[in-house]
Amino acid sequence: MLLLTFLVAIVVNFVGYIPLGNINLTSMQISINKGMKQALIFITAFSIVEGIFTYILMRFAEWFATKKEFLHWLGWILVAVFIVMGLLSWIESHKESKLKDDDIRNKDSIRTGIFLGVFNPMIIPFWMIGGTYLIAKNWITTETPGLELFALGAAIGSFLCLYLFAHFAQYIQNRFSFSNKIINRSIALVFFALAIFQTCKELFF
Image (tube, rainbow, N blue to C red; front, side, top):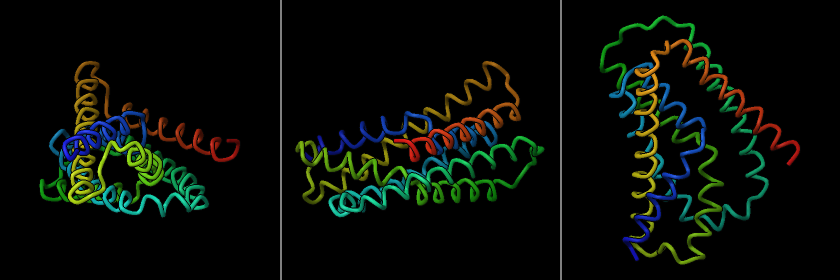
């Protein structure tokens, strides 16, 4: 049962980060602008925070399920996150690339990973709904060390998915020789489109 819990967490969280969102787009952007090493640092920092938050959310999944009004505000927080990330990407497209000390670049990537790990509005409804479903179906165990293994598996799942996005971004850049400016603007437009979609979802559905 513990092995199943671990594997389910990896698969579910891997699949959860496949749809385009602020996390995988940021992973791609860092990979293109700063290189694969910085992307890996970002992904590692984010995945560690993801694992911690997953453990907390799974521990209190039933309590979160009763806070319907909280989920409503999370949708608007997500709109704000998309807009901010879009603006940052657009601003990045106008900047000239400057060489930074490796230590500064590493700290920037770590800070970004921690920030997005903490301010990730989608993780609460994702695990609130998905977590309670998995528990109800007896696909995971909540007994010690079940949740600890589940959180570890979730961190690994997000790491693997985001790594593939970062690697794919490198492949696209090398294969088609797009400039960083074009890619950053494209990512910004995707962020803005996601903000519009989320706004329509909150207003009309």
